[in-house]
Image (cartoon, rainbow, N blue to C red; front, side, top):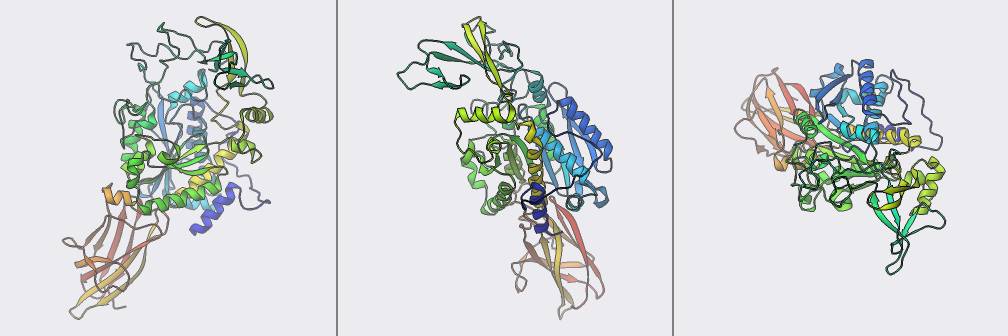
Amino acid sequence: MSRRFLIAGLVLAAGFASPVLAQEHMPGKVEIAWNRYYTYDEVERQLHEIAQAYPHLVSLVPIGKSIQGRTLWVAIVNDPTTGPHESKPAMWIDGNVHGNEIQACEAVMYSLWYLTKAHGRNEMLTNLLKDYSFYFMPSANPDGREWWFTGAHTPHSARHNIRPFDNDNDGLIDEDPADDLDGDGHITQMWKEDPDGRWRRDPDDPRIFRQVPPGQKGGWTFLGSEGIDNDGDGRINEDDIAADDMNRNYPSDWQPIYVQTGAGEYPLSSPETRAIGEFILAHPNIAAVQSYHNAGGMILRGPGASYRESMYAAADTRMYDEIANTGAQMLPYYRSMVIHRDLYTVHGGFVNWTAEGLGITSFTNELWTDAKLYQGTVTSPDERQVWLWRDRMVFGQTFSDYKEFDHPQFGKILIGGPNKWSSRNTPTFMLEEECHRNFAFTMYHASCMPKVSFGRHENRRTVDGLWIVTIEVRNEQVIPTRLAIAASRRLGLPDLLTVEGARVVASGRLNVWFDRQMSDHGAEPARVLLEDGIPGRGKRILRFVLAGEPGDLVTFRYQAEKARDVETVIELTQD
């Protein structure tokens, strides 16, 4: 199957080809509704159901425990008829690193569900599993996910892991979290009437408070998120139940907490990040990483800090751009972005570690953007338009009506406003499409992983009885067997070409097939190390001087951490 055919098919599956495109329903052994979100226990049950339904494809592996004792599951998906999963280039796919980013877990689960049910039914995806394997981790932060579902939150809280932590340095642990004062299951806003207040209620939509210009008085003061002063220190919500931002706890460019909020005590200090790190380090065949977050409609790559820009060589940047730009075509209203340049600075980020510390092609997709809700009808909505569209499409479900409350510190106040469903997460009626388009992009990303084969070769016998064999090794796909950053920083093992069946007198590389000179490999001519691997859609040409007899069979074997081992046998005979 050609790469062009694969890309075209995946774009078609994402829904782009023509206004008359239809997609036939593909039944599977596990039925899951993708118009709702699932608790951790439900996700865990679905994982086991998929593994039991497809035992020939799926192995469910516990890689550790969360702080609260929940199992960290990885589903290994592989077609064993073409070799064990460790023998193939693999893609790591995770989600829900931040507890409140719940649809990231659904995106991973949808990918696992669709890929397994498509095996044997869809030619493209079946062939993909012949060449590559996959490691799915639906929830990297199951404690945070469960807390988001069971606790009261804003759209932005429950981000961190649930390690006991003294946020305000008063010697007490988690003693002043946000409080659901009205018991509606959400942390909303607190407002107080104040003649000197800087906020005014919108006369046409009293849900909206607008800040007045300097020098004017609006009659209302914003008090912050819902809560009280639990510890009597004069502050509210300053010591919530949160500790480490696990997407700041990885080794590459890790910085202490006074530089990077949420960094943790040291790299991989969280049990969740340590388990993930150990799994990835134990699987050097991982050639691609896809991490799902929310929100904003972004396809992100590193670096996370400007001073690391030089680590991304031009060849690597071109590869990243090609993959991300294709993704932007497949994902309407998504943009290809560089983390530090287009978003903000991140130290110790996960994809920064996998890309810069391990030499793996790595992307983060920030799922969902409200632009998908507007479908191009609104480009720069003001707050009134935002609520108009939420009313039209989800019928007021994302707002908690204001109600009076007698606050122990502030007296009579209003509590209400946007609830925890009001932003970031995909509306459930659009969830399946969001998952499918991102799955299609991820499968395209996976199809770009290295695929090595031997190309042309030539034998020639010299006058002194030696043999000169020139051989070509190709990489058919976009991602090189070793990224430029891996070669320059010596990350992982170099590629290796070995020769057996004849004594190798000398060996070396050629720039072009007809070069008369080669770069001598040196002391071990039968073991040629290629630190720079094979470029994407490129080749390496090597020449060997062999001592052997006519009819000898010589085996050439190419090995790479991030590509399948391949070999070819050449008979010593005059071409």
